[in-house]
Amino acid sequence: MSELKKRLSSILESPKHNTEEKLEKVCHLLDQEISYFNWTGFYFKNGDKDELKLGPYVGAPTDHTIIPYGKGICGQVAVSNETFVVPDVNEESNYLSCSIDTKAEIVVPIFKDGQNIGQIDIDSHTVDPFTAEDRELLEWLCNEVSKIL
Image 1 (spheres, one colour):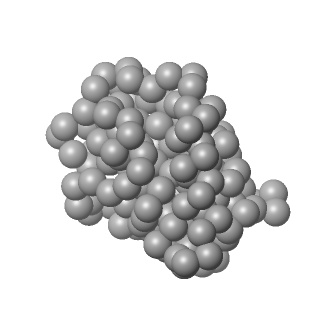
Image 2 (cartoon, rainbow, N blue to C red):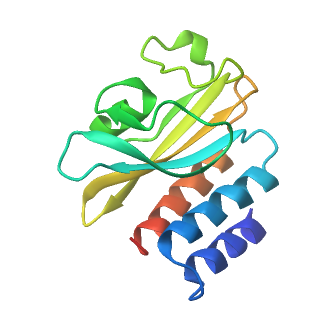
């Protein structure tokens, strides 16, 4: 994971790319390096509205470009301010289905100046694939991402 962190850091620190491009490159790298990350994307607070707006992502197109706070896993994380790991989406009553292939999801909030401003959302086509190491990596990543926003 330390090699992956180095590669992620070099993307985020690159002076050649704007923030949107950096986030897209982060999504691509995670998608390529972790086989069970099947949809990787960012959602951000939509202005002063209590909703999330889809940002850069890699994976199948989604209808969920706007998610109200409280709705689905992403909407819950916008309210709870805590990482949410869903080992099996079929067991989660508040799950918003993006794809019939999705079996598990992890959502990690991004904080800037103490405010929850967005999140990284990862779907997997495998039941219960996410490890403590994945969670630690994504929480570290969200902290690093906050520095360029």
